Length: 354
Image (cartoon, rainbow, N blue to C red; front, side, top):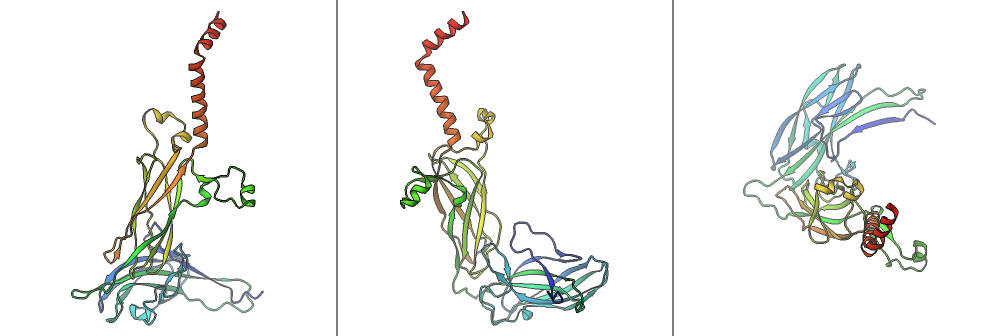
């Protein structure tokens, strides 16, 4: 195999994860800021600076370029294309310009690089996602060399909201839609009265039901952003029991959704521990749900005035704690026997003691 062209490109992007570090880094190279949210009007120009540090012991040449990016899946994995289609005719180099598009950093050298973000006067309203990519440049590997060469590259992400000026009107606003909210099938326990093989053979899939036993539970939500602006929704999940009593709440995780894209969120729900006398009970019993029908409601807030909030999404699920029910049933049966046969039990106890 010819390894002459085997070059590893180490792109270090934060994407849209929960924690936001203060800088992006790859082997020997750091750039800050890693992510910037900017709100500008048509024709407006914004100036800023990058902090670039070469942490290696060798000189590091860098080439800097701008490029639109989007996402390629529901997990927020970055793809370098104009995902929302609103900047196809634009040149990313016209949006983000650096005073020094080529850098040569010495060992352990830190450099401040000026940049400008300029919005074209005829740019459509919406969010533009642009990355300033710092790509290291090294000589080509020797033809006879069987080794690969590491070329670090770092992207500083910009989310530019082009908003109307005073007197301008946005022709239409969008919304974020909760397409799905529920418990993944692998988190549920399936009950088939005749066995799974018999039900499948006779095509009686509707016979039986699925349920949960105890927390923690995992909810999944698929949210679609139909707006032209990036959405960073916040919200809560409220779980209510069979009698409408609140069981607990969970916060919706952070994470941005680009215009026209969908994102899949995973939310962990932990049932609060009971206090008082119940605090001495085993953990399995404290976290168990009482048998019955439960509801979970997801409420989202888009956190932007250019995106409408969706209606709360409610779904139902059933709980049947088998271990809890078995132990409760045994204790109940024992109590009934004690009451019904109390005289015989007392007489037998007296005879034993005598």
